[in-house]
Amino acid sequence: MSFEEDVAKAHALLQAQAQAEQQAEEELPDAELAAAVAEALVQVRKQNPLVGSITNAVTMEFVANAQLAIGGSAAMVYLGEEGQAMAEMGHALYINMGTLLPLHEEAIPAAARIAHETKTPWVLDPVGIGIGGMRGRILLELAACKPSIIRGNASEIIALASLWAVPMTTGAGEHSRRGLVRGVDSTDQVEDAIAAACALARFTGGAVMISGKQDVVCDAERVVRIFGGSALMSKVTGFGCSLGGVAAVFAGVADPLVAAVAASCSYKKAGTRAATRSSGPGTFKAAFLDALYTLDSGEIAERITAVESVA
Image (cartoon, rainbow, N blue to C red):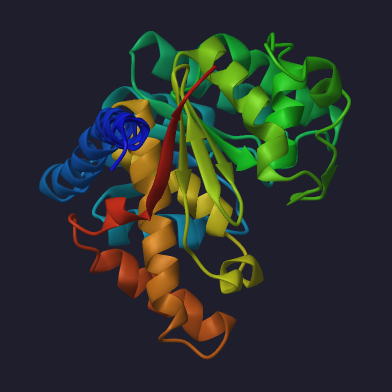
């Protein structure tokens, strides 16, 4: 072997070693996050956190059943005084903007203010953003209450960032013109909403979940990608709403990023498993709740596919 070949071989070995060390450093946060996600499920089943929910009337039963299946305790309310009471006495609060009634214009902001003042973690699902003036007025009031977790599809996340006028470091002009929703459906892709989600996370100091074929969860420092699930999840109403409700359960025992990732991982794992045991949307929903109930803490974090630093 020539001198030049020896040098090239040594250089290659050093480069491979450097890459291995860099990869080990990059994988460390994944391992730490995976451990925290697994522990969050253990703590949910140990503590049985109580979550008060002001949520979509169409999906209320599914939200409650999913919260129970994962290990939490569910309380569905709609009156202002009840929402405020749950914000004070519960481990977390869930607010879903689905099927609004006139009383919600006072009830929802009042409950969110109590949660903010008492430092009770709370989750916001801005479903239907852009439909009607009352929905917009409520969401504008909620900005000051800084939700711990925001969950939505790509269009909802972009639209909320625009409504709250949060500064975005990348793609600001592009995203401020998008975020159009078709009812409760997204017209944008998950990738389109990452800049808006990170901006919202910086604004609230919490975490943001973008739901899609691959979920993305971010805070001000990290972007986490979660894979799995099933196409049948889009054939049953309430999967997004109940995911927000389950995120609130996890928020009762863990910090916002860990809670959001744990909820998303749980849904992706349970959805993948339920798809192998069902013949259509009806049996899938039942199989999904069973899968959620029987999840093992050691397996949910395997849904995490990447953890990236926010630029």
